[in-house]
Length: 283
Image (cartoon, rainbow, N blue to C red; front, side, top):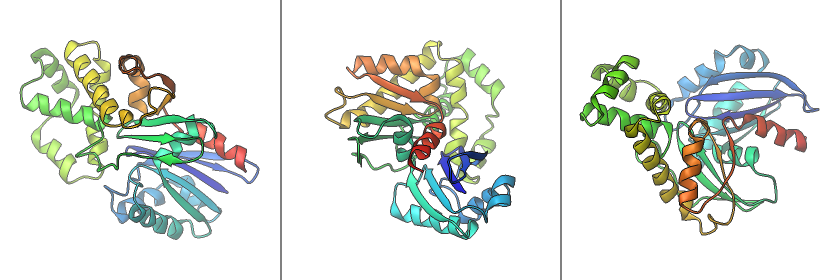
């Protein structure tokens, strides 16, 4: 049994294939970002998933692509956990940028491939190899244009009284904005980046409001400036995206790209389907 996994900060999609490429089952766990989770939390998220626990001894190969796996230290950390849980499996751990590339770009084609979901990332693919100009320092410092970026902006503006009053009242009705609750989730609970990203739904649902529209365009432009335009070939090749932010803000994203003389390739909300298709061709 082969397990293929696309793991973001919020959730992880798992699909099991047999040796002929036929799908055996699909399941989800919460995100398994090693940068923000302890060994114990990750082990618990594996063990409490019925399909994974039931089939853990049948797995012979694990292909895991995850947020927070950009350094060798984090890849080794996760690989050790996986090989202990799936005791008969050979585990391969790569950062989520590879999943985005395999899901959107054919071998031999050039593209700049971006992740705009809970977090954000950007890579250049020359058709064979992956190159990154920017090393991510995580959600506190980077992740421009992402779900947690927009969530952080909304919370700051609400507490600094910069959000329009009517919109602020609506925001307060939809979320628990008590300071103690926010600080508990940010500083004591796992996945603070995923918690921040839950607030991005509000900006998407209210994207026609001038305040939200301004934040969206500024956030997407900041992502373009700090990531996409790092590559000299950006105006010559397609820009592909995966992630919920790029999917739900497609029209705004296209507009920002056009203003920068860039053109959209493809957008996939969830890269797992394209990732599975890639592996079916290689089995």
